[in-house]
Image 1 (cartoon, rainbow, N blue to C red):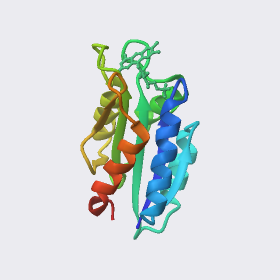
Image 2 (tube, helix red, strand yellow; image 1 turned 90 degrees about the vertical axis):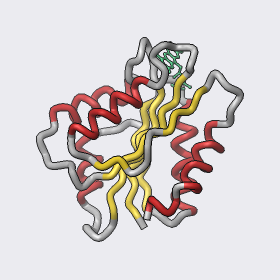
Image 3 (tube, protein in one colour; image 1 turned 180 degrees about the horizontal axis):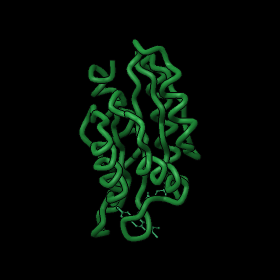
Length: 156
Ligand SMILES: Cc1cc2nc3c(=O)[nH]c(=O)nc-3n(C[C@H](O)[C@H](O)[C@H](O)COP(=O)(O)O)c2cc1C
């Protein structure tokens, strides 16, 4: 079992549904899950480190991209606090579901930027970033759930 903090960046609400689908799937896989629709860095850090140290802490970032490759408004403070954080975060594992539209040059750029930032903070990437392209006729909730199911052995 791992302990997940699902951290959501969403402007129009679509990514919130994907995050809720992930929460449901992770519960089925028997993990502990906290969902953060309005991510507050301090609370997320407290919940991450409040866990029993034998349980693997994982951050699952679900974020869309807006503007021209920008973060959604609701996750900007989290990103800024993460950027300025001097605490040792090297015990945190992470994985990212980036939601975007490939008709933009800046396809899924918010997810990419967070991927890079978390690596510079020493966090461990559990699984390579998963990009979901909303320009295609897809069911992003089902795809995200399938991805978690397919990778379940890496999440233990
Ligand atoms: C004003 C606007 C700007 C966008 N900019 C980008 C972008 O730069 N890169 C990208 O991949 N997708 C971009 N998108 C597509 C969104 O990421 C996509 O529609 C996503 O599903 C929105 O998720 P949300 O409802 O959680 O905010 C943009 C969408 C809008 C409406």
